[in-house]
Length: 375
Ligand code: PLP
Image (cartoon, protein in one colour):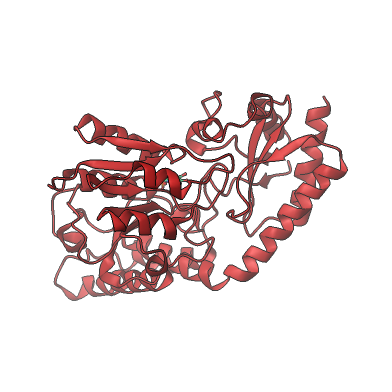
């Protein structure tokens, strides 16, 4: 059988077996609609409550601050568009140039609704500087939305400091934490954020389910109207199995966090030192504060697309950056924003390890890259 090494965990992860086992009964036996009053709906209702409580505990929130959604994209859209719809004299939103398209395109949408958006630059490590926010923010700013960790280069943003600046101007703060939740410690109270987006399939949960944390008292407008689910804020029959799987996966990832991080750091080191030993000319993108296991590499005079396809032929799955950008051969908006030299930028790939990867995988990837580049 052809070798298969999956190293694109920032795009999606394998469903955790405990999450899968916990989900099954809610698809096969306990399939009642949680909104119904009869006995058969009770276990669905209980499971939903329990999933909400577990998720809240994982990020130091209250259960009624967690709203289930269909994933990171919906959570980002909800946070940004809802703030724009909420009637207020303030109209401006501030974001960064390196956000995921779920945020950037939501921002474009609110611009079309007449709400101005400022796109902050980042430094060469992909970090938003406090000074740029200070220079841009005014008392007309309604919300600041900056990602907790970047999906292409893994840089972790100084959210606590940025949040403090936003609050000092009376603005709300949302963070897209899709790449961070389940991968680093995330504490909404410590960071001080008002809203936070997360997605289950990025932390070994099922696809098509996520959540939006909304701090109590923050005015959140419903985007999906219909029934009274999610405290009347997000209508639609709940995805019970999805919420249960997400809670089990997140609890497990948080419990195993230290050992997983140690494992991922070992894989990173194995890959990078092998590349160095093989004399490969590369730079690693991102800041020193990064999501473990997510490695953006740029090879001088290489072609990211070419490397990706040749690795694919060898049974190795990596990415050129954002999963949503695999059809787009242009230099991504993130690499442009960090002003990576063009002769390196075009040769960029993202290797993102997960807990199932091994040292042998890391070495095989490095060997394959070196071979492709020599050709
Ligand atoms: N935000 C970031 C930073 C992401 O990496 C992604 C997915 O790649 C999303 C949002 C969208 O999440 P989902 O796939 O759950 O819609």
